[in-house]
Image (cartoon, rainbow, N blue to C red; front, top):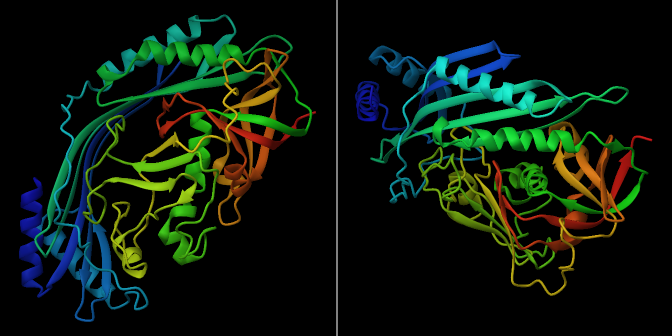
Length: 450
């Protein structure tokens, strides 16, 4: 069933039920994924999903919501009826409406849609990748976490005011996480993730080489003494922290009282002036880009931190109304609409006179800790308090030599971290979560497993 048919069915059913105001978001997908274990199929999945989320407003302008996967006329009518009943229990303290930008033009990035390879081909490709990775070094004994997937999906938004949008795309992903074992030593692990619009876009050899190189690099390890260290965060690690504390610039979190910011925080200097942060969902490098959010608001590039100052919050329709501004294209669809970042881009601003540009992760000869990857984010981050305590994978550099850290935790406060950046390197790197350079922090607490 195509997007026009669904919208027509909902319109007809709403007319029969005397429902004047409604909107819906729909998601349709075909997904294929495989996992292997020493050449044997571990998990094979193929699924077809179709879900519609319907919102209905009653005469008091209160909203009710329901979801359904039954796209027959009977199923859609029943869903509208349920949403209408639910509207009687709508939130009277926060009135939700259509996004005022739901009819604005959208920027659709045309990408060639890939054809599915199918489970059998995916399995053969992953088997070969697993075999090559195990064969790349004698210490690599297994690839306990691996997967290859492809998805083909369509998103739709429409409302009773005439807004209508749809967008379709394909996406593929491969991840390989190797485990190396040596006699009388602890097992060491690392991995690699690669994305593409289709499996043929993924550089599989690069994924294998990266997973192997990173895993082997951790074979020579030692403990680290607990203390405060100069720390270099990899692009992936710094983006992980910014996303973990995105409530700082999330209007929904501010309203709910779970953010370090408040309604008057725009303009506050929250980091050193050398830092710029954008949310750029339409970035050409973003494989998962979508031209509109759950409310139909166009996606756009938004400056969040400009020269260290908080410049914008992320908004849905309802939070924008409370803040007397416009939606930013970061809303999910629900009775209490969620707000979240799309794709973070971090760069060094031209206000960089205070930076120590001699700090370079490839050439610096002094002592520092390099954090490659942060773990246990959900357990170790207290976003409303600004604190974090996270185990990590990384290296201790000293006297020009590096040694993998056996086991350690980094702890700190996001406010302190942003104000104690001592360098933002020139080169920006593409990750699966966004774009960032390496970022250096002065005196972060490292707790070693001594």
